[in-house]
Image (tube, rainbow, N blue to C red; front, side, top):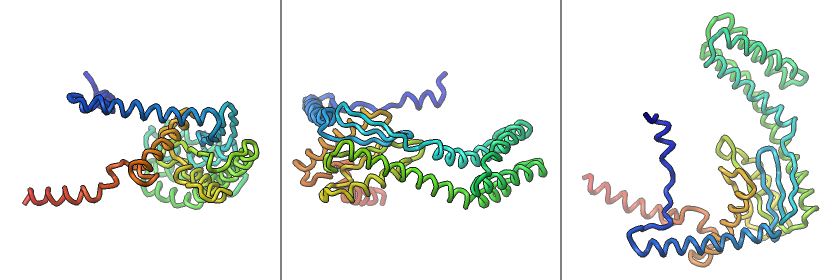
Length: 293
């Protein structure tokens, strides 16, 4: 018997490129998508031939591609991942206390505390170790995990998290600027011929910092007419550089199409129905309310 998870897994996006299927319009729709795909491929070929410099922020790396020339830089090194692991240690404590039998949790967290003690050579590490030690001592004393203890722990950690986030952001920004300088010198491409793609991660807008760095980089370039919203792209579900190429090729094709048929280049940066959404919702809302009366 299928579980609820199995049923949900089987509900997938449907291909509507040949709709309406019961009409010749379905064939016309297919023709449009075929020709649109050819135009996208034209732009993808330009990227792959080196006419455009593509810079991709993914996992711990920054990838620069210009035709067959590809350079890879490590943005998030051991120092960054140390800061990240320190912040994760607090949540590891929380989940272990919540979800693990007390005897097993005690052994696991004793080991975690021993590992944290190795990180007390700086103020942040010391604060983290002390707050965690106090929490575990209180839990051992009470013999149970109380929500109030967790709240006390989180309050003590507020300045710790603030420092960890700032240090992480400073580390990443420093590395990005260093490598952007190297890339600019290596490839010599104008900002107008450069596209930046930031891949997402576990949380929405996971790489928002990198996106802001790229936008500022474009804004301060010698090319004063560069549209940063066009040249800096965010891709929530990107996993390969080929995905980034496809994203930029789509943006170039859509910009051309929007300028031709909708009067301004960024009209297809959203659902095209979004252009008339406010008016449509207002009219439908009024009709719905009248029927309900």
